[in-house]
Image (cartoon, rainbow, N blue to C red):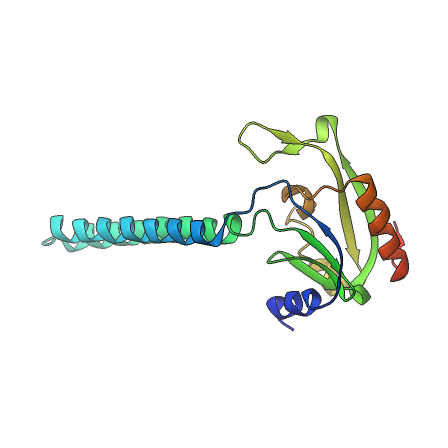
Length: 188
């Protein structure tokens, strides 16, 4: 099952709990406007480069390659990071999901634990010079393949929910623990 199909399947269930991110979600119209603006600047830059370096093949080729790499990198950051920032964590009767980031069915979740981000362990906040603190959920999966390919942790073993600023209130912690108990998932 592909990741997007798993996300759709988990989200098709009845929503039990939603935990919002501290990041402000970027509206789709704003994302489209940024992508269109970036594409127009890229195409105008390429047109100017072709006009200016018309007789010189090597500089034109180098400019084209460098401009395309920069354009692709900025587009990847826009779509991969900024578009997904601010998505909530959703518990359904089928599983747990952070749209476009991670999703697992309840049968795949092995255990959970709570991580405190306070004091020296604060994480960068939603604005440039801010920090955020709170309690995040850490999910451990059952089988080894799922653990190795888990989207709930970063490549260095960090918690993806801390990076996305998904912090739980005490009421949400109680509700989440009751959901985990209902589906037979133990606390680590």
